[in-house]
Length: 413
Ligand code: ADP
Image 1: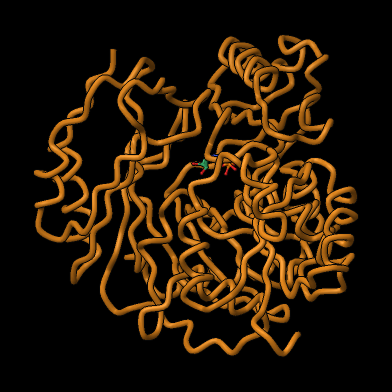
Image 2: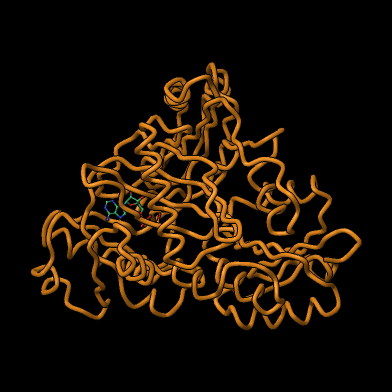
């Protein structure tokens, strides 16, 4: 690392919610940022040393562009934001010789089918699964499927395009709906992800998310979030996340152990991971391990040590700086991702002040603006906003989030 301040490359998809949190963390740590995104910024010519345009769908091309940039302005670390940039980040890190997850590990985690195959082969509990080509006849395929099942795209996130089917008719409808979503997706997707989808056994039970940090191959669990709203389909809208988990210690230990096995099987070794697991009497099942931190604005629920943000931890780790503490604050915390009740145009939002006044609520962030088109799942991927709460117990946090949500009124035309 250079003696002067460190320089870090942040890979930002245009659709991310996470820019502000990472930029703030870099400022706090006194790190010089170079931001790469996939659309040329109108400001790029004004700040050629701070802004770069990359095609994230072309990881090796991105690595080449950054290698040329780094010859002039050395880069000390690369941090991907959200799923869309993890593979490019691994390719760039490899090219620059930086310590990071390997390209094959990240590519496997990024492709839901490859991840299932890898985890199943390693004996990690995952749903039974199969691939269906978009050119296949869904009605014929439905005859060979066990119901209920879940159909999903191979490389989208935020539950976009994930649909439960209980019978052959629903299977065909879900297949067509996902095919239409894939036609309209603008994001850079690998070719295979546009040509097939995954069909899985529906795993009943509760769901949790695990936020972790891999350091030299060792998984440190930062937080386990309970998701108290049932997620039974047909669409799987994320709503409330609360930590610490109210599950019994041995169950939490089993969740951590299975996630650890999944990371090892994938070959992930460095940086943040976000895992989703389902639990029932058969134990924990891994739905997903992504080589990135928690999405949306949800990281605001997490503070560590003397008040460090998740993003500060991630940047410190990437730069090889010592980590003060991985201990989450003692109080319970949670977030509600405010779901979109129906499609239309957001006309107005009322009740934000009343919601923010609920005991325990820290912030109500409405992230959509009046006039904006709002699209619910399974086609959409955004939220109306986020509510954050902290309290002594997880139950009090959940209660505060529900109370605040009940005070919000979204007029959708
Ligand atoms: P994404 O990466 O878009 O979030 P996931 O594969 O994680 O997609 O699925 C999103 C959500 O759909 C999960 O959090 C879960 O609630 C539900 N889900 C996905 N697969 C299954 C499954 N096999 N059984 C039960 N629920 C599932």
